[in-house]
Image (cartoon, rainbow, N blue to C red; front, side, top):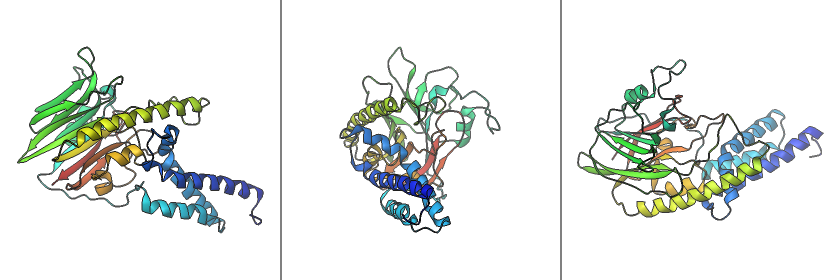
Length: 336
């Protein structure tokens, strides 16, 4: 560091710390939140760490300093062992008998009837109608007279008889079985339906794991009470781990074709995602393009997923940046 200015020495110390942190984060998919809950919080910051380390590589490259090798080496290691943050190419093929599935956290439909600036649709229901999914998995459903969804079959699970909040699966195909995992002491849940498509019976899981309860317009990760926020999020990840165990036990009982979708409230760099995605295809990784951003936040976060069993063929994936919720809907065309 002898040939560095005082400012560059400070920057390199920061660079070293953040490169080490990114390298350490590569282990997070293999560490349960039940072990060290606070570490699970770091999984949300992996995309940020990737960007910062890329920035350091560019900075040192411009200054023609060999210090760029630190972050560059860590990024190269990540290229081979972690889930891609950005997809350059996409698969846009399509077959007439594809199953078109959309997953959408609708935030109780509270923005669905409001005209969005420069939007091509009058409301969120018109948007869904235009995309014409065969299956629509809804998180944060709210029973209301304003709902305008045209599907012949549906399964709606409310938290209780006196509660209008819950989850739903809408289908163009006949539903022959349905059920709920009925999480206790939370508004979150997992529901499922078995649909008949031609000669196939396909199980659809709609997942909504414990919410992070982060309000982008009211708080951020640098707030004064960040310790309190991190403690709260650590507890959330522990609840997610318990909910996940229920799901994995239930999933083992089903041996047929399946699609697992929903709002995981966690990123692709987490233990939660690693456990759910085992022996499955992530439709974004198979056919998506870009960041696949699914949450309306200043940074591209992907916390909503559509996963299939390994035998499925993924012909298309899209994430739609529309403002009818704090989440963006994701949709994929799937075949077998």
